[in-house]
Length: 240
Ligand code: FPP
Image 1 (cartoon, rainbow, N blue to C red):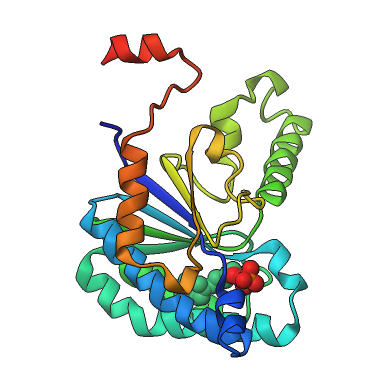
Image 2 (image 1 turned 30 degrees about the vertical axis):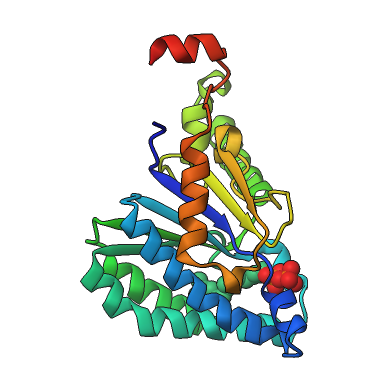
C-alpha cells in the first residue's frame, strides 16, 4: 500500500462552471471556495498530513482586473470566516509564493490566519498564492549565487538539499499525489521541483463540482499505482 502524506490540487474549471450556467466567472470562484472546504474535510478524513492548493498563480495576474479583485476578495473572506474553524479542527494554514504583490488586506488576513492556526497538527493546509515554480527557481538560484559571490558558500556545496531549502514552497514532504480537475492534463508551473515523482490524477469534473467522493476516488486510484522512483518494477516488488 502506498503511503499518502501529501496531496496537492490544481483547482481548475471555475470559469467554465460559471459560464455553463450563464453566470459571471466569479460565481465559479465562489462555488470553488466551497469545494476547498470539501477537499479539506476529505484530506482530514484520509489522515493526510499536507494538502496544498493552487489558489492563485503568478500568471493569473493576466486576468481582467475585476476578476483578480474578486478572487482576492473571496480569498480574504475565506481566511476571515474560516480561521476559527481551522483552529478548532487542528488545521494549520500557511501560504507560499510572492507576498509583495498581494493586496494589503489579504496579506493582513493571511498573517492573522497563519499566526492563529500555527499550532494545528492534524493537517497542514498550504495555499500557493501568487506562485509560479519558475519564479521560485530563479529566486533560489539568485540567492545561492549571491552567497557564492560573497564567498559564504562554495559553488560545489550547492546540492538538491540546499537548493530545495531556498524554494518558497518550503521544505515539506513532496506531494505523493497531484490532482488536477476539469480534464486539463498539465502542471501549469505548479510545484515543478517537488513533482518529480508525484503521481498525477486528472479528474474530469470542474472544480466547483469536486465532491469528497472525487477525492476518495483519486486516493483509491493512487493506492493502486506502483511507485518506482527510478527503480525497476522487480526491485520494488522484492523490497516489498
Ligand atoms: C482555476 O479556474 C481556478 C483559479 C484560478 C482560482 C482558484 C480559486 C478558488 C477555488 C476560490 C478561492 C480559493 C480559496 C483557497 C478559498 P479557472 O478560472 O481557470 O477556470 P477555467 O479554466 O474554467 O476558466
